[in-house]
Length: 490
Image: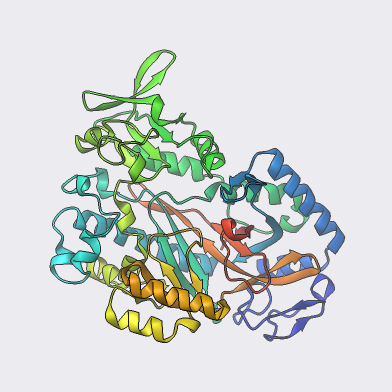
């Protein structure tokens, strides 16, 4: 089988006999660079698989996922609350060189985000110098006045970061958005790998794939390293909203992986500015809280007074330096989609470096130039609300009806500061098992970075796949699935 295939052609070998290589960048079939031996080995083995056998294995995988409780919750569907994330048994393969580029870019991004957050909650140099508009930060709904002047341990605000990446038609990785609050999905990365090694051992055999199993160890180490000073053996806990949260499976999974207690707000109490956990043996001190609930629910004395999920007095204990909260309160400023547009300037300002990973071109509708451009080109752009996630509330111009375009114009004019726009990127594709056989489906990638004394990036990340033909929306809540991401060792 040839190392490269012309775009728009059909690969005529075995399982790929009917695979139509699209005009998009196909990560397995039409790479412009010479494919690595490991990637070629995976591709050649796939070509000799029987289609019915792959379907049988897929059915077995989905049955196991459900039995293991590896689900997420869709609150808008009254018929099926818990769903598995559809899993594709055809892996996504990244070469060692590709991963090295991604890893360096993600580390740089996380370093700049932490410096930015420290600055805006302390001296505000970047605002005073006019690099980022002050009103965009200080007036941001996620800016937290309680964090002003608070010296977080090690200067780490974002202990866990999920950076959403896409690839353009040339195969370049571009950053689509940052997730610096409570990024989810890492449990699927690890469980997907376990599932692949069980169900597809004949595909993985002899392929040197970088492991993902040390994530729990790395995360626990980072959380311990950023505990308050002077604590020899810090107690780390994972704070969950409870069983009705969409990502509760992940909370249980991560607590187990780290070997730490999984707690809810009612399990914690603050006494004299210190946090304790209720146990059968009495109160036990807590030093680091890996929280998986939003700022608004953390402390009813400071945020939402009606919250029953948080811990009264937690922010006071935090400000006194008696507990570390990961990720820090107020980090949502850094992953706001409007601030995203300034990240290249933020990187240059703090690090005096060019970004290793470029942003997708972004127009800020809060600015007259950005709004005018967006309104004039609405049918060609993707328009996103700055505070939403999960693929909700966005407009994909080329796929929108005239009525939808008119409706969005009215929304933009009514509240331009709530939106940004970007060109439609023809996302890269990966062969995916569909009803008719292997077909090209668009994918993105969310690498997870863990920061303590240094930043470590989990090799691979969550590859989400748009299962509907032609769709660019990969979010699980919008019908997307996932793939195992194989990073080949050097």
